[in-house]
Length: 153
Image (cartoon, rainbow, N blue to C red; front, side, top):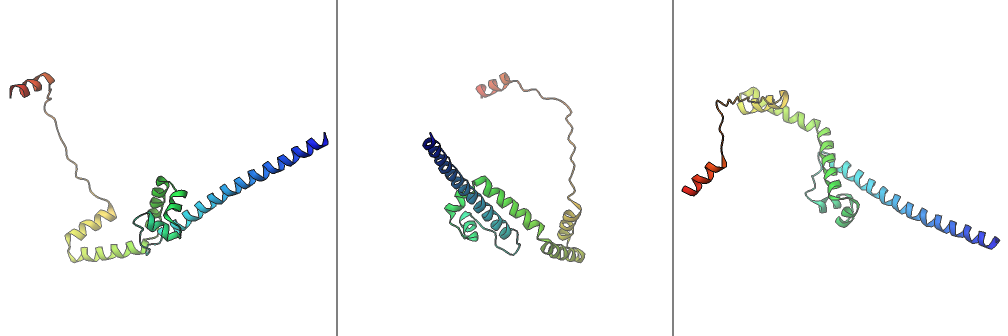
């Protein structure tokens, strides 16, 4: 009886070792995925860095192969990373936007009408032209009339 108990304890130990190995592999993959995402976002968030045109450039930025990138991230996740990178870039581009607004304001003050309009649109919001349409009567189209005209022609 004691031998059977010892064997079951050994089996339990072996099973738990395998489970922990599998868990650590999964954790390593998650950690690698998180690390790659963090590296990409830190690169994309900097205004001076060139924006990657495709997944090959994106993979080379963080030093992995494109297949590894596709292994870790689905196309939807890659698009989310692009979106997050754009948002970070917008938040980090205060100095660049200020220079643009200053030069636009300078041109507007010189009398450039296009610059004046654009500056006001960007700072105060665009003015929407409201158009009012009135329907004075109603038009009822019956399918039978349309078919007759097509047949007659």
